[in-house]
Image (cartoon, rainbow, N blue to C red):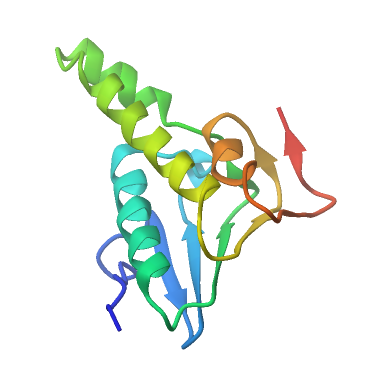
Length: 142
C-alpha cells in the first residue's frame, strides 16, 4: 500500500487524514477562505493520484475548515508573482489547477465533497464534476 503524505505537522494549508479504507482531504486556510495556492494544489494533485491507485482506499472525502469550502484560486499570490517579474507563474498555476480539476472530474473512486460555506471559482471546480456532492444549508455560491 502506498503511504499517503500527512502534512499535519509540516504544512497546515491542507491536511490529509483517514482510516484504513478512506481518506479525508481537508482545506485548512480558513483566514484566506481556503483559497488554493500553488503548494496546496500540488499537494492535492499528488495525494489524490496516490489515493486513486491505492487499492485499500475505497473513497475520498473533500472538506474544509472554517466558514468557506474554498474561495478558489489564490489570486493575490498570482498577481504578486507577476508584479515581481514571475509572469509565467499564473500560467503554471492554472495549468496545475486544471489538471487537478480534470483528475477529480474523472476520478475512478467515489469522491465526496462536503460543501459547507462559501464556494466560488476554483473551489467549485474541485467538486462540480464529480458523481456526488454533499451540500449543507450554509453553502453559498458566488
